[in-house]
Image (tube, rainbow, N blue to C red; front, side):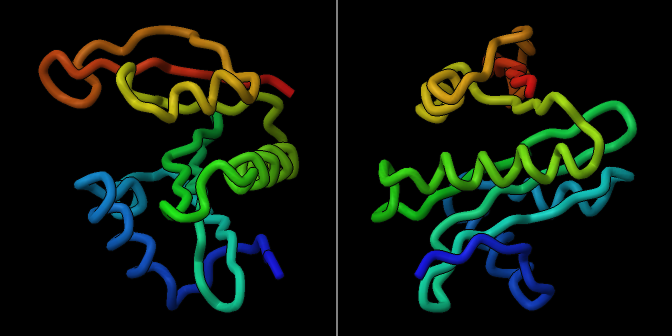
Length: 140
């Protein structure tokens, strides 16, 4: 049975290592060095974490830092389920708009656009020289 819940303290290392393995860096670890508040929502089935969404925020807005689904579980609606939960969490915190910065060449861009996000701006060199990102947003 699928369970959507907040990350447990003993799962921090698993989240960070998964990010390093898949992306080469960890949004969660990087956020630990900032003043942003953060929360990780995980999708679990039979004790196995199938995916997660990292949210971080301050007084100015709330962002999706990362949304990850394990390879064998993609294209099954799990990403949408985590995105819906991210919106619920955003509303609980008083936000009516959520942001995500996504590489212009990332396959996740289509996921966000398909789920109602709009491109607000292009952020030049966000991921390094000539590696640009789109700042996306969704109002609700």
